[in-house]
Length: 391
Figure 1 (cartoon, helix red, strand yellow):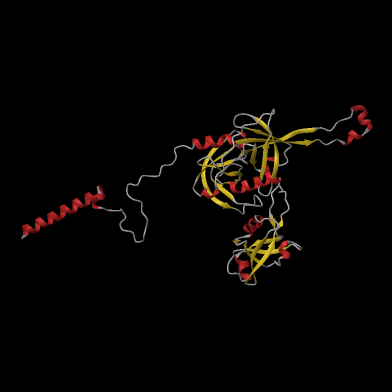
Figure 2: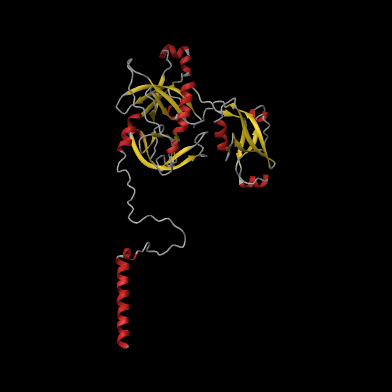
């Protein structure tokens, strides 16, 4: 009996030793799924042996496609010299001659732009060409051509230029391919192309960090693409393209305390830029809706004091007398909840929704007044063009 027990003990010991070695070196032989043991919650695990997703080894094709369409913009502004009062003195003029007014050396600026049409139309930022007396476009092939401002929209910081044909010959211009914003998602690879610090055409790479950025205080109408592709001074007006080289945005601003890139850049989506561009080309200006109200954000404290269920909507703080809102019966203290069936999240969304309505149309507005839901019909007015104040 003792011999049998000894044999049993040795067999168990050897079996445990073999099990330990196999589980350590070849766990798949035992059909183990995870070294951490069974999960206490339902999790999605990748299948064993699944090949990794391969990242494009190079974006040379995207850059090659987009680079010829991105131009450098050089602007100049002449400063009129002031006539000295002594020049009006006859005695002074007798001895020193009659001085003539002249122009001081012009101030120059630089930025970037994107050729969006073979007709010579170029999209850029308004602040790149603001107050410019002369505009020169430098193409990627080395040609320098003059351009004129077709129209601008300070509230979205966009401008449309047109390259002037030279020597009576039709120019062959490389127009960029426009992308679709519906295909743009956070995490997509993106390339920023421009002329940072005037060093020459430069391509930087990053990803889409966020979409729909607003409340930044950059423009009146804000709906930015945020990217970590390096954008620096001189990139303004340049192209933000996807991994296929299609234009998805116009680079506009950076968040920086030093003036250099900190990985937070903003671009105007091509859907907005295209709409503004087409209106400018068609009529020379951008038409937006207006109803004549002032609105403020609903904070938690305001919601509690007004007895509101949440902070959604825009609190009407003022109504201009004789405005479309006044004619429709909208009053201060009302909360605007929806415009034409689209929810109003905050005053910025309200401004965008109203601006998107066509002047002269009648639109339904949903309001909350003293915890009662109301419907108001408003005839949209035309928003007056406004110039942006710049320091």
